[in-house]
Amino acid sequence: MTTQKNETNGPRSLRGRICLVAGATRGAGRGIAVQLGAAGATVYVTGRTTRERTSEVGRSTETIEETAELVTAAGGEGIAVPTDHLEVAQVRALVDRIDRERGRLDVLVNDVWGGEHLVVAGFGKKIWEVGLADGLRMLELGVKTHLITSAAAVPLLLRHPGGLLIEITDGTQEYNATRYRENVFYDLAKNAPIRMAFGLGKELAEAGGTAVALTPGWLRSEQMLDHFGVTEENWRDAAEKLPDFAVAESPVYVGRAVAALAADPDRARWNGRSLSSGQMAREYGFSDADGSRPDAWGFIIAKETDEAASVDDYR
Image (cartoon, rainbow, N blue to C red; front, side):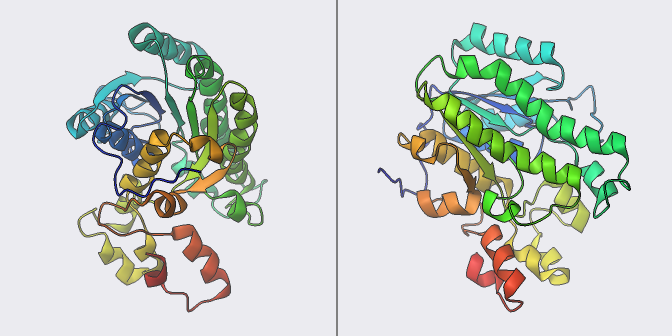
């Protein structure tokens, strides 16, 4: 087994690779797209919020055009394609465009979500207390979009051996298997990608492809920073009010996890598995933007049985 331990994979390690990050407007998707660009990849970035139109998430300040520009500035080539991944025709048109322009797809990242506002409204509620329309919308955004995108894009992904499909979710299989996540709709929405990666791993392996589920830890997304009233520059101020927030990670971290997986010639050893950014950091030797190496899921699990567990031991 070949294990990469270098801090970075080099600025050109993914030069010539064609990637699609579905759901790259903000958060993990943007971080992933930019880090793929930093490794030299061409990255198609999709989402519903553009400089002309804002999605139901209601955050007009983050757009796919901006993400594409950040990818290019990082050293890759960013291409923004407005796409609603619930619309089959739009997704097929996206894949046809990638095929027409590049003739291949090497990495597919399914990061479509955009349901945070629905989770907040249904936090801790029973199935009969959550608005049914809101609950079903969570499943559309977090599950149906991923299925549509994979069905349309996997044939192109498998045209050349070694295609990599990454399902982004919230929580590892180990954690989610024995814990109930907020409400039944959110629980299903975030467990489904883990199972999808397992099943698609079986299907892709026959053609030399790899599928994995990957979760960030406590992500300092734009929305999370706004929630705490901090920025990426002073985010540690939030830990003064909520000490556990000190284990949070930036989107750069999960982005580097994806770039490391994409550059690993032995990535098939992960096929079908559930992975975390902290686990991948230990495996591949990369760090977060501030040089730390947080393990949020390790800390969260430890804190359940040991109230004295220290963030310092998991960063």
